[in-house]
Length: 156
Image (tube, rainbow, N blue to C red; front, side):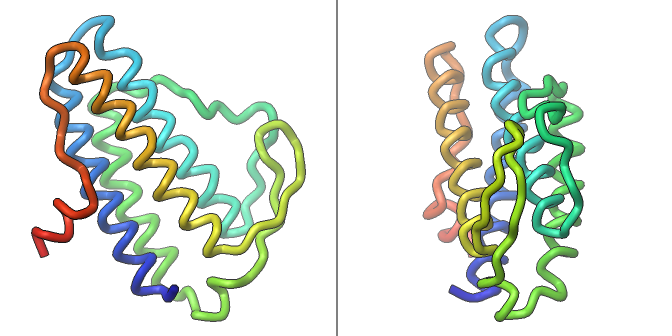
């Protein structure tokens, strides 16, 4: 896998996140809380992983991986992360994709993974939770966004 592959995956992720946030605008009240919590979680964990990738320390045990953002705040996060990931990929060399990253999880446990593994995890993690959001919206009688990768690829 190369940088272009991951850049495309993160473009897809941004597109899918934006559509999901738009779909959350149709939901109100207590029905909105679980899907909005999952969307907030996507952004919170992406921030943590980005910090790890760029070498910033995230405080273990105190990092809130389940914040409760509003729909508007999630929309702001969508825009913010487009810029964050563009900046991250801008100077990333092919060799750096396979570099090891040592980090501590939010429980304080230490791990080492490659940049490739982490980037793959981020996009798969987001897709997993977007699927949960879609299920919650459908069960509440709403129409979730279509965020399948193939729908994104067909647009190009």
